[in-house]
Image (cartoon, rainbow, N blue to C red; front, side):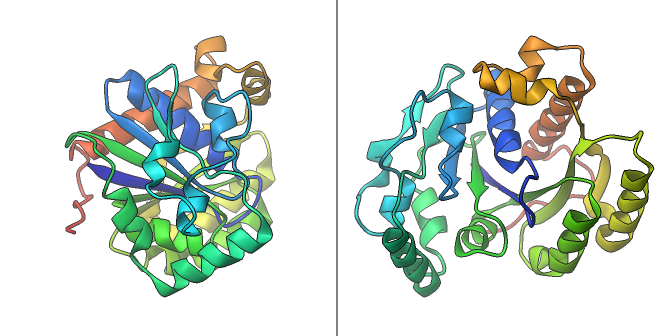
Length: 259
């Protein structure tokens, strides 16, 4: 079993959408998938098909209020096992952030209890980096996918944070989300980002902007079902194919993490 953390250093990067989409696409490829929401916004469940926001979840386990946390999991129509964050108060979040600071391996140890076969994968949707949730996700991860929109402020923030992201035993890749090649500013921004992150930014890790993505989500669907021939659908399938191959160790140049 491997763990993949979806992180971002700026808001509006589409991290949660990517985490949910990759979970579904990998599950449809026959891979056992668990998705865990470490973000207090508690939005991953809405993307994965929950009709209401889960009241209790992983956040309460982090705060020491719910044990074991596996008792508050769901499985969606695509077979993704899902652990929501749950609706937490400010006091509860303060408590679990203090616990995470005091117990650096808490999340990694909790996630190790997920009973998936060797080909299984756990995808983590985290609060924005830097945060205790994101740092714990990095410690638990074999692979980190850092989502960013190709906008100057977001990419500058990522470039500043990238050394900290890469200071981990995990492989780190950048996913450029909501790309619009017609905008010259975005092309210039990507050139500057590539200079900052090097081989972490690859052609395969780009998802083009498509206004149909939020429309599909609002209807409870997916762009790759509603518009399977769109560029965004092609990009998401390509990213899922790359991730599927990486998980099987078929990507040259990316060594596996040794735990």
